[in-house]
Amino acid sequence: MMKTGRPKINVPLEGLDIILDLLSATILILLIVYAIISYSELPDTIPSHFNAKGEVDAYSNKSILWLLPGLGVILFFGLYVLNKYPHIHNYMVNITEENALKNYRLSTRIVRFTNLFVMVIFGIVMHSIIESAKNNNSNMNNWILPFIIGFSILLPIAILIYQKKINK
Image (cartoon, rainbow, N blue to C red):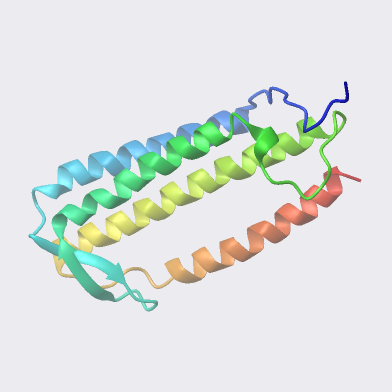
C-alpha cells in the first residue's frame, strides 16, 4: 500500500516556542483583566472605531469592549490548536520525511508569532479605546496603522526568503 499525504511528526518545543506562547497567553490574560478593571469606570458610550488618522469615527455601547477579549480567546486557542497539526498547514514546498521537521517548525513559529502579534495589536486597540473613553482623548497613536501594514508586508517577505534558505 502506497503512503500518501504529509508526514505526521511531533515538533518538539524549543525555548523560543515556549516564550512566544507564554507572552501571548500573558497578554491575553492582561487584556481580560484590563477590561474587567476598566469596565465599571467607562461611560455608557465608548469609542469603537478609529479612522486611518487614528481619530475616533464611531461610538458604541461600552459592552463592545468585550469583543476584543472574546476574539482574543477564540484566536489564541484556535491558533494554539492549529499548531498541534502542522501537517495540515499550507506550504510552498513539497513536504517530505527529510524536510518535514524544519518546515513544520518554521510554520508553527509563524503561527506563534502571528498569535503574539494579534494579542499585542488587541492590547494596543483596547488601551486606546479605554483611554479615549476615560480622557475624552479621541486619537489612537498615528504609528499603529503603518506598523501593522509594514509588518504585514515585511514579515511574509522574510518568511519566503528564509523558507527558500532552509529548503535548498
